[in-house]
Length: 253
Image (cartoon, rainbow, N blue to C red):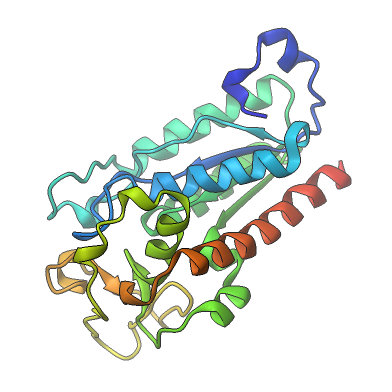
């Protein structure tokens, strides 16, 4: 169920053990071949699939589209807010849910730049509300084992506007993909201890802008290996894991 589609009496009749899900996304550059809405489109597509699968057993909150994308601001079109702004905004939203009696909260992240602040939201809100279950997850990390079997690229092939994201967009909203502008592998290495991608973390973190990481293209990875069928398989892998998490929270309540 979508939270905003219900009337207040309908929401009032909803079991307070129902997990409430919030997608944190972005509006930012995704190279020359994907739209600024990519992370929001992917997150929204996953929320649609979740609603179709679980119906009245889940509540989907309005998506937060503009989040933390300062590292993309070298590219026109990117929108961003400060970490402090997103922290306050999301925590205020969660306080509203708690005030209405809901205790199972899942934050589904579809943008790499939200991972650090997402963990802070989890820690801050969780400490303030020990009676709640709050979960923070990022889709590619949640389904990493399955996605490793799906990928065809080598190291550096999955990062941003890459094999994975392009494939999901080809499956979910194919008309938005500028296929003629898709290029091959693009990854600018740095120190061996800092090199990372979606499925493999570095031993330490090194800040670089996306312009520096992508050699000015806005693309990290190999989008040429994307296909609609691969996007379907990625979606199925992600949804299998997400649905299992939501169901386990509901059953434990």
